[in-house]
Image: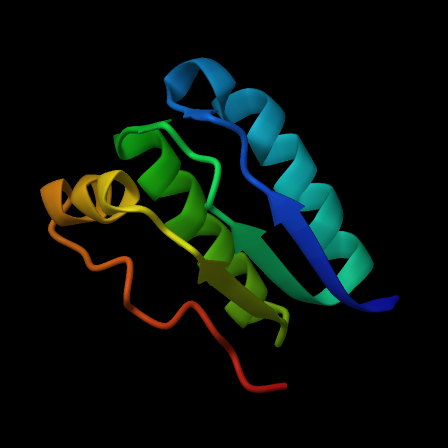
Amino acid sequence: MSDTLVITMPGDCTLRAIRTLHGEIAAALAATANLTLDCSKVERADIAFVQLVVAAAGTAERKAKRLALIDAPDLVEGAFARAGLSAQVSFLRAA
């Protein structure tokens, strides 16, 4: 199992892309103890993306793994805010 893996999120993080993103994130969580989602390239994000990240954070926590969201642009933070959450919430689990 690798120590850290970074996945760069695509420009489209909406419902259209969720199935593919889900598969990538699930595979990464199975292969690493520390997963970082780099959101610097995200141009569109919606509630489906927020749900995916929250679910991945829950999976990581249950498996004593670590998930981090980095370089989230305002539009990602806006998607979290519309869901009543904060992208600043630490999606980290101490190993």
